[in-house]
Image (tube, rainbow, N blue to C red; front, top):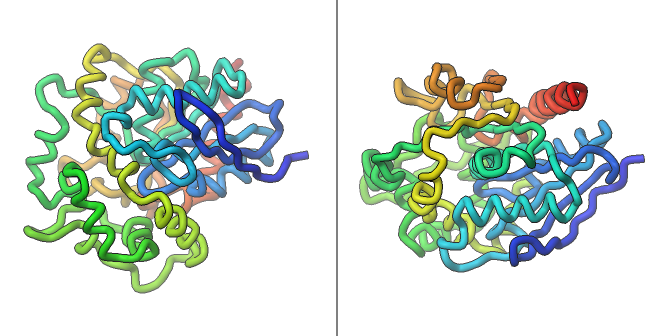
Length: 323
């Protein structure tokens, strides 16, 4: 019998992470890593679905989020810290190799896990964010400057700036502005405008999420604040330095990439979807399957939960049979 969902705190890499888990503890471990601005709750549909198919599903609140520890300095949010958090979870469960899925920032952590410790990953599913080769000559912050100060990532860099802008709105409004995004550009605000003020609130809540579900997120961020999550963006240049030894490395783990055709940043000749469908992505991730979901936006595992769950399950089952 599949057990009910349970939450607990796990000590890993010197901090406490809150995790939600469900399923047969003797089943194969599937680790689900969320993105910005979310918690383990973004995987609620997949937790139920995968656990009902015999998998032991674990979804943490990443460091800085939800009920996990939050450290004040952005220097504590590099990919070295984040991957070490994940390795600590795998060690806690006594798992030599696990299946891993990541969305948004969780996807970046997953890619780095596959780079640093491919021996610990049986198969990887990335949602929304593909693997981009490191540019040896261009720091992320310099690249993002080309979009101007209005780009959300640029606005997130200065400590306190985005926190102050977000604080002008209640947390439920902030959550709606992000979770219900249907834009396909790179989220650039007009001059002298904060991105959170520029983002619109959908006139109606779509049928894939409820007001009560959005409120679950709002209550968590009301307590935790946004500094931890924003620190991920503030560590991007540090990540660029850390990743230098892996310059030109390829992802050798079997991988499935899933994204909506209307995700953020897909628009235009230099959009993400052009890269995903091009040869570069396949050359740096040679063992790759690509699934593009029609009419899918950024928070794809919630919006298209059944389709995403089935795609993940088919990939896990296929790899389980090849052991």
